[in-house]
Image (cartoon, rainbow, N blue to C red; front, side, top):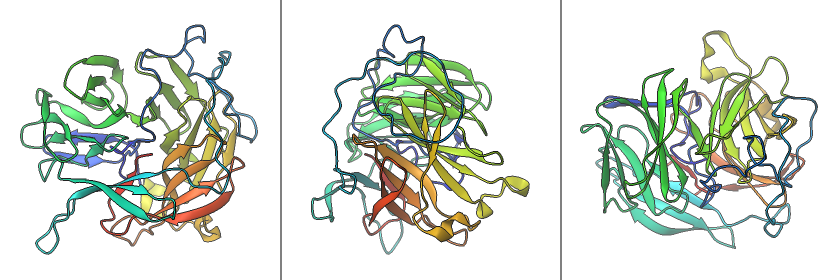
Length: 369
């Protein structure tokens, strides 16, 4: 899901207020691929539903979703063997300090399993109110500037900046719909106006008004959620409400990723506790079929993570052509001051196939795709 996501354990809201940033959602991104669905909206004739294609690798029982008929799938990409890693792109945030002041970096995972730096820069360079949102292809960045209260979009090295005034309004942290288009929100809690704009500052479009929360973005889709329901839309507003068939007693705390065809999504859930302190949450992640709500639980990387220790949260997820997933998991415990990420390769059945380390160094960052 795109990295305006980067990774706070509780991803309930992404709001930048004045010069102070509170970033709790990630989806950011995240940013889960180099391009999202056609911004022209869902195909005609599907009742405004999120497009459905042949990605049907979700099991589980019961659930509710839109009953709009699925549309014909686009040709599938070549399948990836269940234990094989696809090409992965990782973002590492800039590090500040007297002893170390490393630039932000874009990494690519090589065929031998190592990570190679392909780009460096200093987007924001201390001026951002909150996290930097990086485009799926790693070539651009966006952030809200603390002092000037404006949205800034630049090349990843921090040059070629475009500034978009926000008129001093509270702002949802930006996310990338694809590598050329940014989504952000203006207003205040419960009455957000969601806006999309091209990376060059043109093409401003109001996507939705009077929204209750800031959105999560993944593979071009826009998601918002409550404790039990996820709403997914495209830029033109074609929307589906999904009620995942997860056990009673669990609440949704994040949308980690949405498949490019919009047919499935990965959610993070937890068992609520008194005061909703995230330090003791027991996380459970599910892959959910957008049409039916059926859910398949993703097996924890370690059995101990099923205990209420507060770690093992799915932060970002990328859907693969064979029905499998690559999921960025935060393995940190409540006592840790920073996240500790691991990449997990899941099969279509939700079982762990293999796992891999992320680039060594600055802990803040995340999976772009």
